[in-house]
Image 1: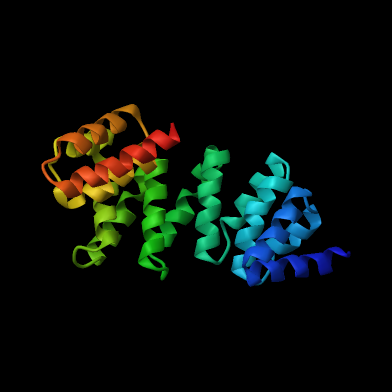
Image 2: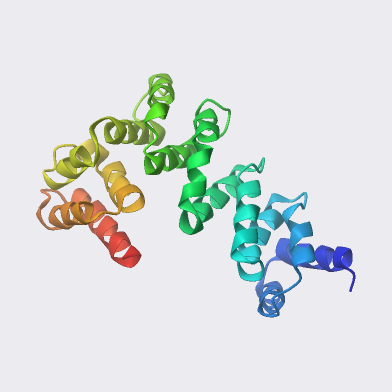
Length: 227
C-alpha cells in the first residue's frame, strides 16, 4: 500500500479509537511499521494523530532520528503535543532540553491555559533556569488568588532562589502546609534526590494531618517507582 494511503488508514484508526483500532495499531507497531508512514503522521493536521505518531516514532526510528522528531515536536502548535515532546526529550536527551529554556519562558506570558503553564513552570524548575525568575515573578504577580498556577509559581520560585534544601526542609518539618502538594511534586518530579525522598518519607509518617501524610505518601511511591 502506498505510504500516503497507509498513513490515512493509520490516522483513521487513531481517530476512531476502540479495541479493534488499538489491535490494528499494535500490529502496525509490532511490524516496526514504515518510517515514511510515521513521518506523514507526524505532520498530520489532527494533533491527536501527531501525538500518537511521536510515541510510534520511539519504536520505529533510530535513537538519533527519534531525538530529532522530539526536537521538532517541541515546537508543535498544540500544547499537549509540545509538552509531551519535552517530557520525552527529558527522558532520552536531557541536555537537548537546556536549549529550550527561552521558548519555555515565552510560554508563561502567552495565552495558553493555566494548566499548561504549570507544566512549563515545572520544566523550568527541572532546568534550574535562574534566568526565568523575573518572568515567573511577573506571572505570579498577575495571578490572583490561591490558584494552582499561583502555588506552583511560589514553589518554583522558592526552589530557584533558595535551592533544594529550602524545599526539603519545608516538607520534612511541615512548615508550609498550604503548598504541600506542590512541594511534594517538586520532590518527585523535579529533584528526585535521596534527600527529597527522605523528606517525603519522614512527612508521610510524621506529618500532623492526614492530607499532608497522603500527599507525601503519594510522592514517596512516585520516587520508589522512579528508582
